[in-house]
Amino acid sequence: MPRTVEAYALDRDDLELYGVHVAVEFAARLRGNTRFDSIEALIDQIHADVDATRRLTG
Image 1 (tube, rainbow, N blue to C red):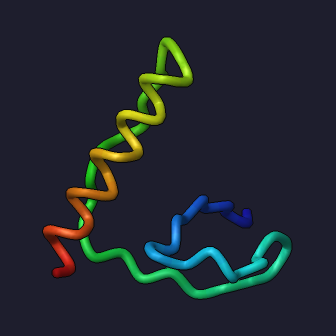
Image 2 (cartoon, rainbow, N blue to C red):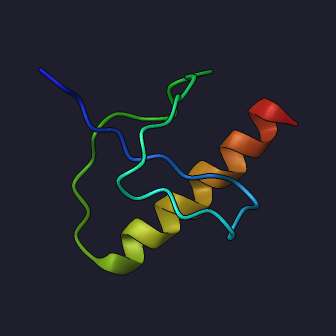
């Protein structure tokens, strides 16, 4: 069964990858699946995830 993964490319806004098969390497798990009560809460979590990723990769 094929799997779909949503990934965020840090510091890149020039990529058009929808529908493109790419390789993704996982370095660490930041958090599990989470349901958010609002779009604002989701945006706050995305910012926290980006910060955590920068700490892990920087």
